[in-house]
Length: 451
Image (tube, rainbow, N blue to C red):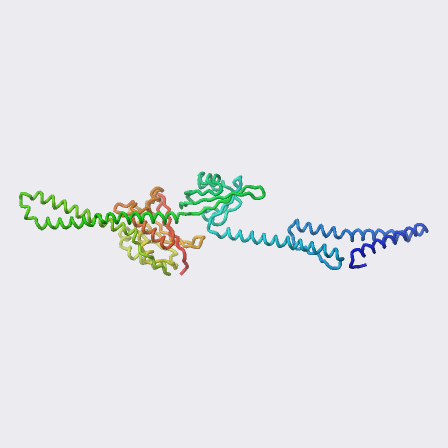
């Protein structure tokens, strides 16, 4: 009873049903009841099989629709042996399934691509809806804010209400600058937003970037230009004054007898005055020369070098000063390779250690520690810590400004030069401190590896 053509199968079943009903009627008329029972059962079987056969296409359609609804595109109908028209119909269903499968695969591929893109870009991305629920926060944002779980904007209230207010109020195409303290670090964020709707729902996409490095670079450039101009103008005025005062002082000293006893007081005043002018002009000249160092940092020559060797050389250079102040220098995890100019890195560590020595002047059991740690972004952090007097927040904001110093005889250029050297290395320096609890400088270096 297997025929390839659907119509023949239907006609055959109809004829079989007609014959069966006819035989059943004949048996009933001739009172052949036992045979009538058998024939009645046969008629029921033929009717049931006929209904099942005709309804098979409906079952296949149901399976197909359920598969589409459940996004299961693996359903495939055999398109041979069921008649030409059914073959064509099942072929169309298979083509529809393949088309949906292709669309689904392309969407999944695109989604994975965008997901990987958002996961790996260094720009911090945040997506929120009208209620403040966070739908997307990429790893860069979580790393920036040091928060692993961000369900909604309330989780960001720890950074202050002004920051959350900015995120709520910033409009599409707008850019705002926000200063944010994260743990012991101060961030200068550039915040940009765009707004859109998906399936009738409002979303806001916010990007954040810490532009502190760019601001620092521009600040250093501005200071260098200012110092260069002032230095030039001051040197133009001071040089002739220094030369002339030295000449006049020499002439007065040489011709002392010409003044005679009656002009001894005049000679003394003139000699002291010229000497004071000479000393002050020389001091101003040396002062200007000192601050011109900020604009004369040589080009760095980075190469692979061991941090441990640098620290040991610095320790040797400063050993006498450390012993004079009974300061203990402790090191840990410093045996690693860094890509930097070793002479410049020595200068950086010397500046930081000398600052720590001053901060430890009134500390019992003074200790300076140098160690390293690995940042999640792959860079290595060099930590320089002391248990000195610490600094308040107002001082922390000024310590890298040229000429600013808290030391009695400080020049105010040590940390400024340190910052410029690290900028040449595309490195970053940060500081955290609390009054009475000590200070920690953190240098973030790229291109490091264990030795």
